[in-house]
Amino acid sequence: MRHRLAIPLLALGLLAGCAPAAKSLGVDDAWARPAEAGSTSAVYFRLQNGPQADMLIGVESAAGRAMIHRTIHEADGIVRMEHQRQIDLPANAQVVFEPGGLHIMLLDLASDLAVGDSLEFRLLFKEHAPIDVQASVRQP
Amino acid sequence: MPSRASGAIFRTTLHLLQLALICLLPACQAAYTYHGSPYTPPQAAPALSLRTTTGEPFRLADHAGQPVLIFFGYTHCPDVCPATTAEVHQVFDQLGERADRVTFAFITVDPERDTADALRAFLDRFDPRFVGLTGDDEALAAARQAYGVFAERDAEGSADYTMTHTSRLFLIDPSGRLVTNYTFDEPSEVLLADLRHLLEPG
Image (cartoon, rainbow over all chains, first blue to last red; front, side, top):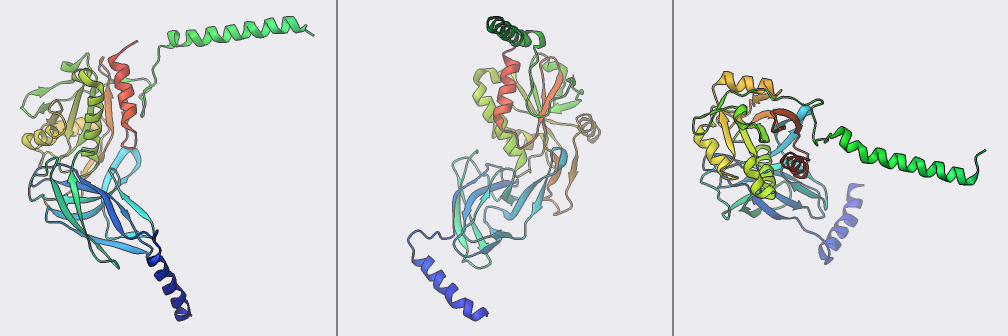
């Protein structure tokens, strides 16, 4: 059963790869908040997944210790941070990292991040090869 | 059964009465409904006994005649605190010169890491007019309690801890009354509208 399904699925996958309109995994509009060395910043971006379901499983950056975080809004206006071990990426889904929601927290910044600077980070996936992204430092 | 003519007169009179009532309402009530979660009725803003980043005492009474915004946060906050401060900054930009009459006070919930210098550096990234407030543990706890603010250090991590805290932005009117507060999900336009109301009475 599994093998009989695998062939048409593979064919579909190839077709999707050839089709000019097929989306591939990519990140755009990445930006980070300005902050002082030793302090904390956050990185935001839009992640567009390709036709294969995947999982974001980690992040690395020389700018600081990077973690995937989500701001959780509880009752009565209380907010807290939750470390995310993985983020599900359904096929072709767009996942938005934005203020008040998902973000990459950068701890213990190696140097000052001033408006106009840029920083690099690497996103690690369960299936896809790692992606290197450049984020510009700016106010929202 | 009334004739068609008298029915028309009756309807016209009714319309005129309705119009008169609608025109009179604002004058009678003179009530402005604040956005966010308004206090009904507004209540005297609890006093604060804190100091600014230059070490001067900060008292709400010294800001009588001006709207005051109060937020409780911390400078190592990656997301919500800078996002809120950025929104206030954006609203100040939109108010232009009138923003000089508004005070934004950022009260630390993390005095251990938020030295006066750290607070000043954080706020200067947005607007040097923003006031950073700190104090001893009792004074800060009293301020939180008075405004119904929760703050707790998260267990995860050591020196790089985050905080769980109330993210409401409080608005005090020029007569020193707490009129409303906003949660994070409210757009900056509602704050702009409320401040415009306070800066242009009538």
